[in-house]
Image (spheres, rainbow, N blue to C red):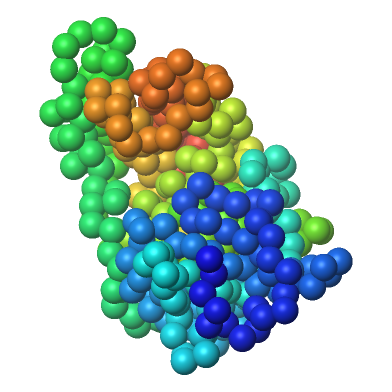
Length: 331
C-alpha cells in the first residue's frame, strides 16, 4: 500500500499506469476525467534508496538550466522517498503529459530523439555530482566476455553462438578510453517523452543516471533505436536512415568532438556484442533474463534467439562502419 506521507496525493484517484515498465511498479494519480498529476512508483529493490539523491541532484540541475524534467515530490517531512509497512520503497514524481513510443517508426521521430538527448547532455556538461547509487561493471564489455567464456560449456548451438560472439569481440577494433560524463544510462525510446506533434519533451525513468562514456550511452541508444525488427528477431540489421536522423538531431544541439566521433563509429557494434554475450551467458546459466513462455518453450530458447539477433546487429554495424563514421562527421 502507498504510504500516506504525500499530502498532494490525498483525495486523488490512483490507477495502474498503462505504460508501466518491467522493473518498477507504476501508478498514476489525479482527478477522474483529467490528465494525471503524479506518477507513483514502488521502486524495485535492485535500486538502492540512495538513487533518489542522484535523481534529485540531476533533475534540480536540469530544471535550473531550463530543461523540462520530472521532479520528485517530497513527503510531509521533506524526504524523497518512503517505505511501506513491508519495507518496500515508494516515490512520487510529477507526471509529464505526452506520448510514449515503443519503436522509432520514422526519421522525424529519430531526429527529435537525438535532439532531446543532446539537450540533456548539454545541460549536464557542467554538473558536479558524485553518484551515491553505482551499478559497478554495468558496461564492462571485456568482463561480460570473460563471464561468457567461463559459462560456455559443452557443444551444440549455444556453444557455437558463444564462440562466434567471442570471436567478434576479439576482432573488434574500437576504442575504450573516452572519459566518463553524466549520462541517462538507459535511452530506450520508451524512456523519452514526446509531444503529440512529435517533439521531444524530457527523459524519464532516471534510476540509471550515472557517469559513463558517451559511446556507451549513445551506442546503447542506437543499438535499440536503429534495429527495426527488435530484440527477438535473429535477422536484425542496423538502419542507417534512422541513425542518420538521430545524428543530425543530436549534432544540431551538441556537436561531437573528434575523439567522440572516432569512438562512436564502433559503439553500436560493441554494445550489441555486449548484450549478445549477456543473453548467451544466460543460455548456459538459465536464471537471469525474463522470457516469453507464449512464444518460446524455455528461457534458453528465448535467449538463444536474442543473442543471435544482437550478434547479427553487431555484424550489420561492422559492415556499415564506414557509413556510420561518415554520418558522424557530418559528411
